Image 1 (tube, helix red, strand yellow):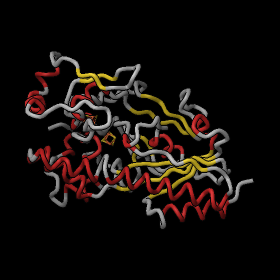
Image 2 (cartoon, rainbow, N blue to C red; image 1 turned 30 degrees about the horizontal axis):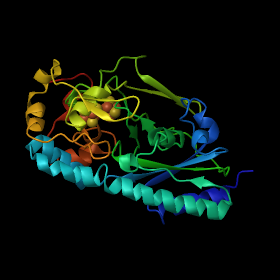
Image 3 (spheres, rainbow, N blue to C red; image 1 turned 180 degrees about the vertical axis):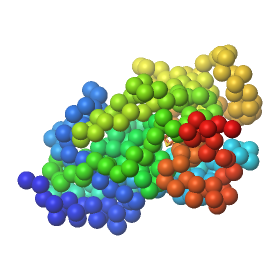
Length: 313
Ligand code: SF4
Ligand code: SF4
């Protein structure tokens, strides 16, 4: 039997005590299409509900990426790393996971499993983006990032799994957030071409709660070139990052980037490899009042309108 008042208590706790920006609940049937080994019951046998939540990234942390890419003030980007990506948001989510899971166990008497957040503890992780989608927090964008109507892709997600049967939230049913047949901003703002142009039927389809959405098949090797500052491939057996020779045609397209990284030591240790040296797909997406927050305030000078409706200038 689902207990809605307990569900409401848990959601209130997530928003107030754990200070999350949004919270939603997915019933376990919404994960019927999960890949093998990545179903919530692979992590918590008997899991019946997934409580997904997010922190909003501070606009000032997002601003660090504009200063990096627009002013070429490269060293500021670490502020985005600390407060917009691997640092504060993940530790905030870790703490929220801990608090929410203990609260769920207290009020339901059922097991509640917290998840790690980001690459902080080396554990295998469920996809937090997919948990958030299944819990009705928003929709996927063509960039493969989860968009919320309030903050666009400028959120980080966490999720607690529980054997308690809570009342699920409806899937997101507001206006369509991403229209990749018209908007090409993430594709055009991606410095390595990792995000392909939208072609109907060529995206990856995600299905949950009777709702389907597609997103691009990102070229992760190209994305890592920017984010890790190296050509790198994951070693399938160990998961380590192995640098490969920089002799492919991308080098010509990426002249500036390669020059920048050439002067910086490449650290390829699994937990110490920077993964936050880009994020343009997140920082320039128009969803979540981008114009009002960043363009109209002068924080970004990029005219992203030229990448909408195929109306390139
Ligand atoms: S930048 Fe445009 S196409 Fe890309 S995810 Fe955002 S809305 Fe969708
Ligand atoms: S993080 Fe940067 S390189 Fe990677 S997909 Fe986004 S825009 Fe492209």
